Image (cartoon, rainbow, N blue to C red):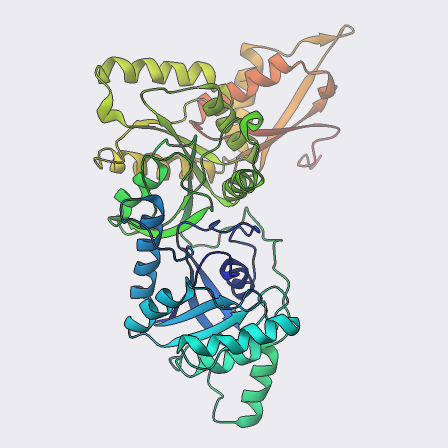
Length: 472
């Protein structure tokens, strides 16, 4: 079992920058202002040959337990309790502040091994601040720079003392190899953002992003699904800022749930931080496989809800519509029928997407939601044989032939599926560039209905020329 390392400290000392460096990706939002991180975020960290689980946390602040800051602090305390080792980060540039001391005491009381990092230790001011960190009584501070990758060798030395053998590699009996590993830790690694978003190896968890407007209940729903208060919730709109991934298992099937920041209309987004949060949510959507668009059942299908579904369709993800807060609805049977009809009318690009009533707060409808998720996931991955497609094409052309252009009828001779995730079909024939949108819409709708492809985007290509599969 991998070692768990929690990064803690007061706000704006560089915890998220350190997290991003250790996981090798820009996963956590980073901004100059304090308090950007609210939920705790986890990732798989790598430092030379060391492998461990890393947790980024909100900045520790004194606050009333019922307040947002108090709930953020509780998340950080939960991370400390879960961790095997704590990285306590202070800002060497500003030096010790009064707020550092009570939290150093909190970490000391936890009884967990502590590594003290004096971050932002570049330059003379940083060196002095690093020296001042001795006063915290947490041992010898490591002069560090998360931004520039300085001090990684020393961090490696500190962590390796606490590593189980399977995480720490096999070669620490040899001093030369240990030195090589330590040197490798000090090499700067640029975050890798060029991941393939469409290829999921067999056996990997299904990635499910929960998106929607602010205060739709996304974090509350995920907490109820996993059975613990893993994500910050509350009456305040816009609590979630980072896209947070939470591993889960539903009926022996592995899932990665991705909580995202609420998405408002672009015209109403003024702050840089909110733009970063929405951008992070869009990025999570691109890497998901199924997207649950969560609506507030008391005010469903507002313009922004439709815009979000349109964004999901453009990214080519499978779609499930979740009607949250269903317990607050009076005429449930009548409203469900009305909203299903509304979804068909307003969302033709993902026609047939499951519309699932649920209550994240009460825990109702979660099984229905997950059955819908795995159903559209299977559809999104489906491949249809060329023989079946061409039998369908012959019937579709006979029922509604393509129009004529300049006295010559457009001919569609052949169809094949070129890829899945989402389903993509290629049509071969003559003058296909002249096909009107209404006719391609007819073909797509007929494909969707005939082969039962609800809730997934359908892509198509029109190719003029000889059928490449015609051996004659």
